[in-house]
Length: 506
Image 1 (tube, rainbow, N blue to C red):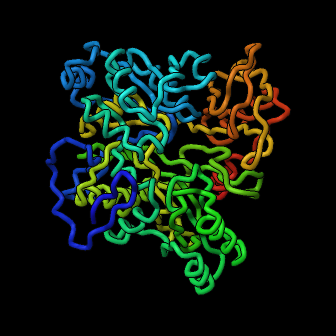
Image 2: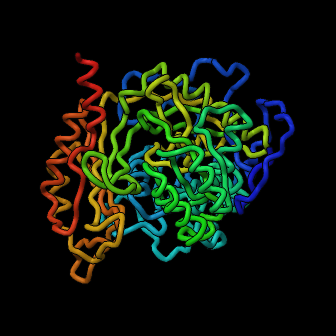
Image 3: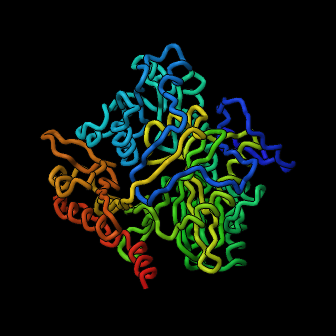
């Protein structure tokens, strides 16, 4: 199976997989992920003292990753003990990254390009709104001028476009996969074919370019059924069709009307799976895969999981349904075969694998729904280790806290919405509890210095607690303080975790 090209149009060769070797040249311009897979069922090297959201990193070999990075490129003005980081992106994920990185003892300073007004006002990073992140030469020049020792790429689009390729070629350590490996997210057809070849459990599917053939297949399979645009569609290219008519409409939207542009050049028609949907994260570096915590989000726009899909209306971590036994199953049947398959195809992966999973109701076993190749909230030293192929030196423990986030969105989202509406009392909302933090996903400042809505999903009101009830209570107490009549949020974030706790209790 050949790795997808940067245009995500690579084909899969049908010959046998190459022998998986542990020692590879650490040049991930073709991208990298790996794990000590000589024994694929070997114990996962992670110390979980408890479940939670606070990452505590231990460098088991007491290495200074910043020193290693400084020695890789003589032009980088990196201090001996700490590193300057550039975060690429400008949404809530990037705010969370900046917040975590700025508090890392390994970080000297954090830049964010382009960033947003909320990130700049919070002091979590110095925002560079004029840096064109689509211009790799401009990004490289900025990194050299300001002594950046690590670039963390937040959004998927720059990864698929090859920003990581160019940065690494210039000798700048970068957390994020190459364009070839980013095809795991950039093309659902590529991901599905990888699953087929390496026996990774996933939903049955077919790929179509002709709408008539796609509709005929839907008639044969029946509803409910899932229709997906092949490429990147900002979280809006998936329709869970409960009727044939809904499926036909989705096919027309993708293949006839061209609503998703080049991302809709193919449509994937997929089996409908019943069960619990969860997210699972693993850091990968070309030699090692390190599992992180799980999460569950709420995609539908309305309470009770009704209405259209969104980019996410809230989430919590960890997901109680993901037991230690299930984590091992996910690693052995999904993450490690993906790592092994990508290396065998000449497409090593460096970065975070964010697996969307369905825990099937009947079997209780995980199936892969999709991969994302970008991340949310790591600690700086782990990212440095991943960039340098040194994850084997790192072990992780987790705080006992549970975290939840509730998204405040502009009225009308995910459809048409109004920009420029004033949002008040954000600082006051953060004062409700020391366990509350508000991340800015889509805000700007008006002429009078007021925060205004500049996107669909605007704020992520985040809180920690000893359990889901406490975390939810703190988040919703903060939401009550925010004064934004034109905004809305779901009132039931975390209901699955609450249901699971009650079930276990009884």
